[in-house]
Image (cartoon, rainbow, N blue to C red; front, side):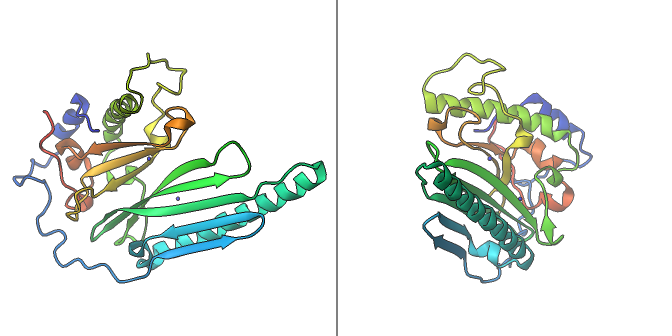
Length: 268
């Protein structure tokens, strides 16, 4: 504005909730999305190219249909454009003074829909910036928009208590190790001082709830880490998915709970 594991701490959190577990399979109200029809709008894409900068920016129609969110995205687009244009012009001027070769800069940012419910819309972005180095720099950002409140909310604000964060952090670190193993094909002995094996804090990553099966409910927390955070740049970005387990479901604030569904197939 970034594989799912269950741990005992998450179950302990569930026991602290006053409400009993739901009887249905998802833990959500079956009628939560009945009659929900997002407003029609056109997706937004800006493409500009000059001798100093190639600039692209985009977001989906679902975000464009929300006036408050669209306004914030337009403001962000404007800020990023000014910063990119200024940096490119300054770099070109400096190269001219030093007699060096100037390579045109590029900046692109694309927002992708992750989940869309009657109350919450979530998106994840990938931004790529090139300023003449060895390779572009990539980063990720997350957005969660509360239609009823008319504002952005953080991932942490979805929960009744911050006690859920340590449990999610533990699952995330295990999921990250599994993702590393999948990419590398081997286990690298862990070291707390080695970013290739350490677990970068969950709070520093882009985290958004996502609807991965397209049924209108949020079933996964997607965590995105850019290159060079969890491994060398060649390994690209990391994505860690945490299924919504029953404990996590009941840790959500009541007003958000029926927008999510729990995965009851996970081992208890």
